[in-house]
Image (cartoon, rainbow, N blue to C red; front, side, top):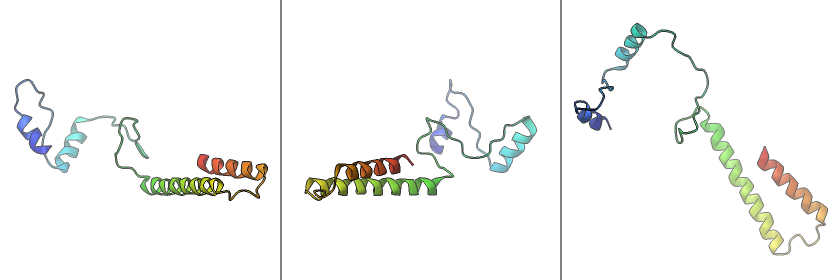
Length: 107
């Protein structure tokens, strides 16, 4: 990408918006030429920015692990039901189990 930008830097008809420099020069220029710069605390989230870095990676990791576990719970209960494992269970107990799994999904 950097090489592509270097090549396109002097193409007629394209704006010259990219300047290669070091971070110190960038921030010094920013201080000299900018006023009232907005500050943001916390994570920036934009709908169209999929796959970007996040400050909540660990939370997302554990949420994903919980999703897999709940999927496994549903699968096991379905397989038990298909093989007659719920034969001694009444309808109220099955509804209770269903509601509990649904509640966990919505946490």
